[in-house]
Image (tube, rainbow, N blue to C red; front, side, top):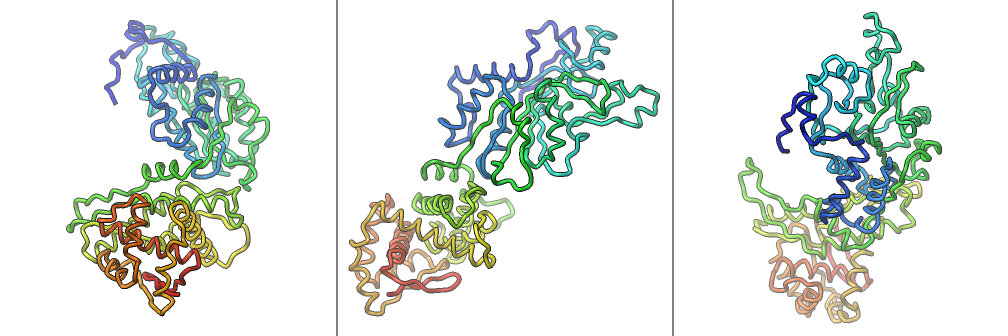
Length: 481
């Protein structure tokens, strides 16, 4: 944040190049400059460059209010909170009045009166763009007074007329004048409250308690909502949708690579030592293989007939699962003393905790057990799909033969990579096959951590292709025939 400009009075402000622009015109002009310079319009938002971002750009260029419509975990709120970056960094407003008002073109009677009385000596203060964005989470208990305003009985008792602006206690929208106001989860507002927004959206004014108090607001209104077929708590009334200029449809990542990029950018993967942590933490490297398995499982969930697709499967699911995957590997490193660890298939059992509550089953279930079984099945399908992309299971039939003779191989989330590789050497042909598969997966076969990861992946692939059986309890699994 740079220091704010120095003009402190209206007279000093008039000596600067400042000119009045409406909020929507300000957004438009700053967006035009950003597009011309080639800068990223929405930095940090991935997967929307050719789909959602053009919709938003067109809406701003058209000076529209916007509704972001999409399932949970589709970056709706994040995009709303990036809109203030398109405002000027600093904006002058009249100092000493309740509602932000422009000194050059005031819209409140209080602002106009102050300028009439003080002229060029009218005090001016500067508002940073971060203070020009206000957000309200819609809940059933939100009232018109919260959003628009109410009569202030105390001020009325002082002898002021009810029709005087100074008797009003203004709500969030008037207090966001000269800025951007966002309502999250719009359908949760009761219909009568939504009706109260009609005038703000169309006529750009507010009326309180039927008194002739009119404020010609300069505010950009933006909303977020889930599709109506999912939201059981309410719906957006049709006349309100008619008054919103553009409805922006969001979506989940179209490709696994996009999803992986989003997860890597948002999940807490780089675990640094905190100042109060005495011991050095093991370094955790997450190979694309493990990230791809999680993303493929989430993608499978978004197509599963057993999951309510109207509810959706949030991107937060992938992020939470990867973080738990890293934590499981981190725990193994702390137990085994390895300075560097890599997540393996055995760590995937711990993503169940980070999927519970994030998916909504279609039918009645018997609690977490059904949900856990479904997630485990989806992970298995993900392993199968990824394996089939790089190899043919029939190539590895020779590995199954020792298991048919009664051999059993145990893997676990507390077993070091070196111990895991030592166990794999007891299965004839497993280690050479693992080395070959590691190369196909783009993993360094000379790295024992990555080799152990590839080995477990191969065993799990044989299991999901019904070539091996798997049994075990918490913390370990036993592969057999």
